[in-house]
Image 1 (spheres, rainbow, N blue to C red):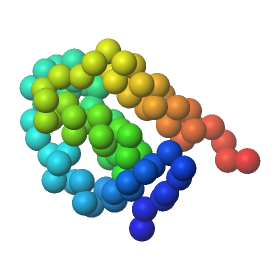
Image 2 (image 1 turned 60 degrees about the vertical axis):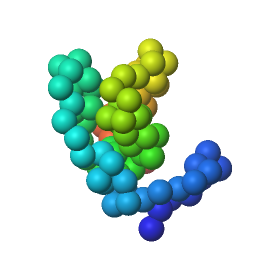
Image 3 (image 1 turned 90 degrees about the horizontal axis):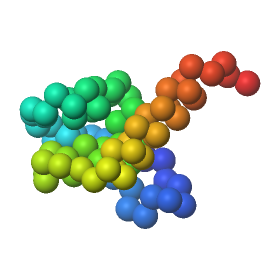
Image 4 (image 1 turned 120 degrees about the vertical axis):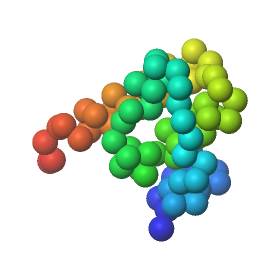
Length: 84
């Protein structure tokens, strides 16, 4: 099953994209950037798309990097905050 929201036009499950996420990241900066828990990639189609774009093109724009970091920070805060 895939969680579908108004933002996700074409939902794709993690298992369907798992092969696209496999690849070697040689740049140490990007290696550190993409070193996040696997469940973040499972939960976020956005994070998967950014990593796939990097693996495909070998680079990212400053905005892509900025929003990737913001999304990971937001997920970290949600995971660390106590449940209501």
